Amino acid sequence: MNEVCVTATHAVTGLGPDLNSLWQGVIAGESAIRPLTRFATARYLTGNASWIEGVESKSGQSGIYPLLEQLIDGFAPVPAGATLITASTKGCIDSMERFQIGLPGDPAEVPMAPLLRHIARMLGLTSAGININAACASSTIALARAASLIATGKSDAVVVVCMDMVSEFVFSGFSALQALSGTACRPFDRNRDGLTLGEGGAALLLMSREQTIREGRPVLGVVAGWGAANDATHITAPARDGCGLIQSVRQALMRAAIAPEQIAAISAHGTATVYNDLMELTAFRALFGERSIPLHSIKGAIGHTLGAAGGIEVALGLKCLEAGLLPSTVGLLEPEESGEGFLSCSTQPIEGNYLLSTNSGFGGVNAALILRREE
Amino acid sequence: MAAFICGIGWVTGAGFGWGKQGSKFSMPDLSLPPLTRKDVFPEPNQRFGRMSEYTKLGLAAITFALRDARLEEWAEKRPIGVVASTHFGCLATDLEYHKTVLLEGGGLASPNLFAYTLANCFLGDAAIQFGLTGSSFAINETGEDNLGAIRMALEDLELGEADTMLAGICDLTAPDAFADGVSFKPGAVFIVLSLSPPAVSNNYGIISLVDDGRITYNGIHADSLPELIQAALAG
Image (tube, rainbow over all chains, first blue to last red; front, side):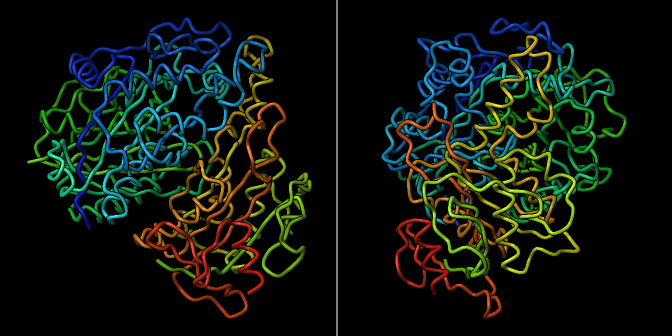
């Protein structure tokens, strides 16, 4: 098996147009959650989201395109023969919305295939690849697939592009499910009252160690392990015993060939819904026992970016490993009782080389990645 | 990488069925048959009636494939993974849900419909119905051979992610306004792939992923999923 190296990362979030602004923002405890002006929110549980200036429909084209421009323009050169894997749950859903209410909007944008071809053209790739939709674990599974392709030698380079935007379609749905916080989300807080939506994107380039050396590329970190499993319990709620997440992490540990004791930090899904956060803490307790491991969620800073969440969290996770610091969870004031030993209201040092990054989603999906610091 | 095909299930414009039972498999560009609970499950199923049409379609084809592979019955959850390829995913449900968003400034948006506005949602229902705990996700691809999900399932088998995988396609008829320039036939077709040889009665032959990324069935290149299914059923 080839070693899977991450050689380039980029992220666009509510905290800024690049990974550095995201890092600076979360280290400073900032949040991009603020009132939305994109559509009327009077009938929804909240009017807040983490959104990006300029990510809106222009000339009838989906707002995902300006997001992609920001994302691809700031990304490293990609080999033309690289495999493309994208991760998005709803792609150009705003085009469907606009078309249905008689505003300029192109229905041909709605299927994912044209968007895939567009991204491939932007990156100068020779083939268009695939999009993965696994709800809020889409980009985690996309990265796991990319790592598999590199590890087995099926691809020399894989570029993963993750994106989702804040649309009224999705906003109204989470509001109808009573899943939105009335103010701003507070992951793992005992008074948490729901999630806050966000938009963003991430791009990551993965290569084998040999390929990075051949091309003289930097190694930002290594994807050491990955796993995915289904709860097989409920469509929209997690299994309370965390069985799917536990199975995913165990697979990732096995593939990384490390013991649970070697995990030095956790980037959790941490949506701030009552049941998700409790499920995660239950799973991590089952996996790691009473040992203290720094854990955070970045959703209090940039909202829940859905299909982009895992990609942004991995890009940030590599930065955390490099700096040896795990930023605090924005919004966390009173840690959930069962999170003792995991949760902290301040930035914590990472004393080790491995960071676990996990995501879960509708349809019972769970996925885990283990990142290793580059020596 | 090679695996045995040990179950085939489908719902197409020509009807529905599994293995060598029922309607002959073909994938015409015709309206899909309406599916009732009794068509899919012999016993009452409380959830089926509440599912979206897209979910019913995908779940039915998965049910038929597992029935053909004699994997429908289960007592303990099983690490079987599922990969499904789709062009439009749950667009029909999206449109239905969006109508509810337009009422009362979004105040009447339907939470039940929203729960089915993800392309992978029917895989969650399949996981619950059949205790499938492997990785499950939907893909969108740009190719027209409809074999992307099968390639990925074979890769998962090769990596040791699972010993048994389901792979296939699922699409309702494209809504008129969105169908321009898109070429595909509606329907859902799933096959069960296994590393272990099945019983003679449901051993449809060997499917392989060769180095150039192409799929072969019993050593012969398969150019499309319907062609592969027809060859397997004729074998």
